[in-house]
Length: 172
Image (cartoon, rainbow, N blue to C red; front, side):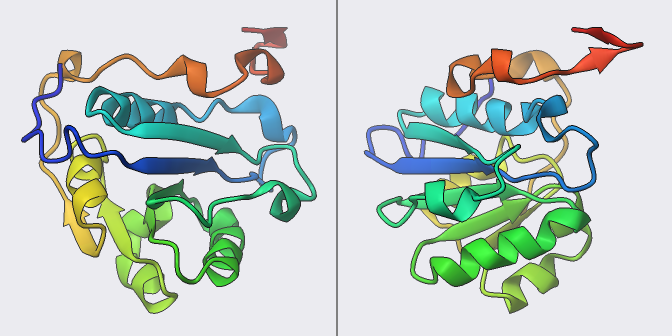
C-alpha cells in the first residue's frame, strides 16, 4: 500500500471530492472519475471521512452542492471545466478548495490567482495526504514508481451503474 507519513491519521476530517460536469463529452456520464476514486481510497485509508459529489450529468449542479461544512474540497479540473471550478470557488469563498488534474498541473498560478487554496501538480495520491493537513500552496510529489502501492479505487463513492462507459459501441 501507499506509504505515507500518516500525518493525518486519527484526525477527523470531512473531505469532499467533486466530479465536475464535463461539457466536452457527448455523454457526461461516460467517463468514470477514476482519479478521484483513487484519491478517495488514499484518504479513507488515512482515516478521513470522504464523500464524492458527482455533478456529472447535472444541469442544476449548484443546487445539489453542499460543501460549506467541509474541512477540505478537492477538484480535478480540465480546461473546459475551469469556469465551473471557478464558480464553485466564488460560491464558497471560505471553504478550503484545492485543484488538481490536467489544467492545474500546467497553470497552477491561474488557480491561486482565482482564490483556490492549493494546487496539486501531477499525481495526487501522495500530495493529497499533505494537502489534507495544510492545503495552502502548490504541491508536487515524485512520480509513484510502484503502482501496486496505490490502494484500489474507492468504488463505493459513486453509483457505478449510472455511468455509460462504452468501448466499440458496447457498454463496459
